[in-house]
Image (cartoon, rainbow, N blue to C red):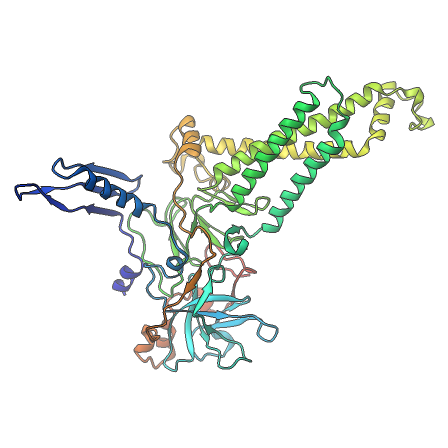
Length: 518
């Protein structure tokens, strides 16, 4: 079993490449360009030792090839047939219909009892298979760390799984994300709320510019009406741009490993605890420190900060700085617009004459003059007052959130760590805290890690069916007892053994520790 583990999940912590041995004109050997890439617990260290006997053109080509390999993007084909998971043999498609709304995954092939069900697939999906049983009618499929036996479809009228010779990249994605433009744009699980945020910004700025701002009379307190309009439009465009970038940028998703075999325990760090490797049974990976499984998007995210429903996406290592810029722009936008609204109200208050105001009731004659003028001003433009109060509440909450994120950037923490009090009372050392100024520099100037996902999911994944399907390794042993057959699924957790039924799909949120399904 250890051999299989090493084959499946090999992740060396140190890679050393020595590029060739050259020869000089006398036929003597000379050491060529040597590039060492060490990955321990810190950044990459590249050491280049140039040989004066090696032509400069060859040295340049070697470096270009090295950089090209480092910058190679992940393709959709490689994403669904990863080199570190050779157990994937085929992909099978399940199509939900009124007659077959779900597919049951069983602990063992041929099991029809309710206690043998490990999960229910409640939506159409394409799942990887790892082998068949001895009868050839059942396949072992996986959704991350959740595996089970599924029945192949026999006829066109019954439910079951059908072998997929090719499929679209979005069909095989098991997260709760929503794809736009045929897979070119991937939004988070709260895409409807993200669209509502867009509509709220567009509607609010439209009302402000066309309905309320023309009522501002010059000279104003700070800006003229024209200057106010220009600044408002600049902040609006910047807010929309950073909002979309935050929503469409990969926050640092760690791809799940769909396999019945649990990965080996990492040996290059602490396992367990708030700042150690932790196993995610939903994704079947040991996620690195400071990462977390997002129950909304059903993926593990590197340096997870929080899941923002208004952005519709997770906020993590790769998009937190964009999210902070969005907060800065939208906070400034709400502050300026709310101040302008109350400035317009003050101008109306200054011009209000109590004696000529028919809006005041007769019983308010004994009320002070200033209160009557204020009442008359509010009554003359109630929509403006409601709009200004709404903007004031938005500005208060947004500025508070902005200051909070500025504080956690200053101390190199995440919202998740702050809420969990990971570093409180010095119980854990924050090795990423290098001082306030350096922390801000790292947050905005440090190069972001490369995404582990394809740039888009528009490509078609073609499955190689040139080789016949093989039996799952435990089926080869021709197990005879129930206890032996039970080992055909290596990833069966305690709740599955007790008959708890889980569900896979976008309607379900994976749990952080695999104990609950919804």
